[in-house]
Each structure stands twice: as C-alpha cells, then as structure tokens.
Amino acid sequence: MEKQSKDIKTPCLSIILPCYNVDKYIEKALLSVINQTLKNIEIICINDGSNDKTFDIINKFALEDKRIKVFNQENQGQGVARNNGIAYATAPYIAFMDPDDWVAIDMYENLYNLIVLNDADFVECDLNKYYETSGELKKVKFDYPAMENKIFNYKSDKNYVFKGTSLSPCNKLFKKSFIISNNIYFSSRKLSEDQIFILKAKIFAKKIIYTPIAYYTYNIHPKSSLTTQKEENIHFENIIYEINQFFKSQNLYDEFKKYIDESILNIVREHYTLCPIYLRKKFLKNAKNVLGNDLFKKFNKNRKIENKNKFIENIFSLKNEYKFGVKYKRVTLLGLKFEFVIKK
Image 1 (cartoon, rainbow, N blue to C red):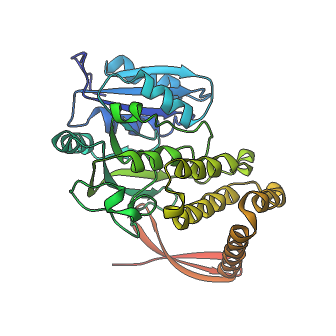
Image 2 (cartoon, rainbow, N blue to C red):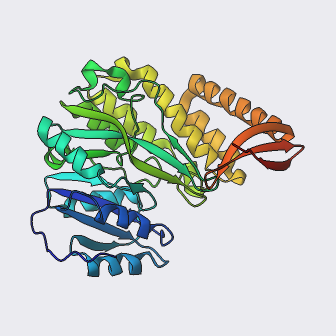
C-alpha cells in the first residue's frame, strides 16, 4: 500500500463508499480509488454497521492515506449511508462507488474533466459486469444508448430516462450543488434505493454528458444484493409509490407512463426473485393489490414463462461459460451439468 504523504485540504471530488460486510472485496475497491490519476480527492467510507473485518481494513487504509475519511453508523442500508456521505462531502463534485466493485485508474480524472469543461449537472460512463463465479467480463449494453459526448437532457432524449443508461449512481459523477438544490436523495430502503435518486437527477438535470467508455466494473458475486434472497424483499410498495408520485408532481406521468409501468414490473420481478420461496405466495397476493389487475397479469404471465424456461433448461441446455478467462461449454441434462473446455 502506497502511503499518501500530502494531506490535501481542498479536494475537487468526494468519492462515497457505503461499506457493509465486504472484507473480501473492500481492499481491491479502495486500491482502485487511491491509485486514481486524479489525486486531489477525498474518499468517504461509511461503515454501515459491519460485523466482519471491513471496519479494520478501512481504518488500516485511512492510516496510510489521509484522503480517506471513515464514518460509522448502525446498519441502515446503502441509501442512508450514501445520504450521510453527501452531508460529509466537502468537494464541489461527488461520485458514488460500491465497495465490492472497482474502477479504471483514470475514471475520475476523465469524468471530472468532462463535467467541469461542460459545466454539466452530471456526467456518466458505460460499465462492465464481472461474474465472479464464471470469471466472465461483459460490457453492459442498453436498448437506447444516450448521445455520446454531447450536452443533452431528457427533453432531447426521452428514452434516456429509463432505458438509455444505468439507473445506478456508480457510473456517474455529480455536481454537489445540483444534488442539494434539487433535494435529490436516496431512499432509506435496502433494495432499489437508488432508482428514485437517479430518476430525479435525469429529470432535473439541464446538462448531461455521456461517454461510452466503460470505466466502472460491477462485481456480481454470491453475496451481492443482486443475488441474495432476504425477507425484506417482500416489500416494494414504497418505491412504486415514490416513482409514481414524483412523475405526477412534475406533470410527466402521462408522458412517461409506458416507461414507468415497465420499470415497475422490473422492480417487482427483481424483488420476487430475491424473495425467499416460503414468502412468495404472500408476495404474489401483495403484488396483485399494489399493481392492479392489468399490470399484475403482465407480471404473472412473464413469471410463468420464466419458470417454464428454467424448468426446460434443467432438462436440457447448452451454454458457453467462462472461468478465470477459460471458455467452457456447459451441458445440462436431466439436472446433471457437464463442462468441456473449448480449445482455441
């Protein structure tokens, strides 16, 4: 670990990491940040009530690098941790990072230059997904990519709000005054907590810049929030209410209704997948009440198709997969899986 000798008092960028039980990943995440080509930064680590070695590892790094600031809170989730990070941030620009991911060494310098040069409200880049169990790295593709390296806002590209780029804050860099003046904050929920933040940012921003370079890498692993089943995932009512109310308050609900409905179905589908099996009957009853007949019918139809496809895949499927950069052919037959290395 390289020691940072200079104590920088006026950072140009605050990078916020909400940290909860990530002792396996946090070192790689921090190394990718402290070695950035942009040196004039502060790194705000919010320890969200971790009960593993996360706090010890963060403190060790903080002793070596004065740019790292550590704050503790009881476990309240990423949304609350990020909101607290915004309050602690002293720089005029803010970035968010998940503590089990990593970033390219020049990500923040390039995004910082973009946002300053164009006086944008926020900038964003493309991202990769790394699948830890298979070793596969994929660039994320979007249905309607945003305009590249040009100033725009939602009025010039309506598809952008829901489909143009990620609804994550992690591949973006924000002007702090833009966040504060528009009262843009994360939900206190522990799943989908970032959606209302990003949707508000996309609607309120007058100047947005997008670059197609994938500087950010999501690490998809067995303990990530995208793969872990928890009882709390039975609740999704608040995020749906928040999204609907926000667009109604901006007189944009009718204009975006098709996109809103599709987004809501995706949220419910994600919560259903991460809801424990023994709670799913209760989940479906709740979903019918919240969604109404038409949306629930669409959700239920898609759910049954997905279950049928999974059943068929367990009988027979043929897929290419990767492990540590090695390409495999995976054959599933009557629930049994066989792997064969594909030679170049």
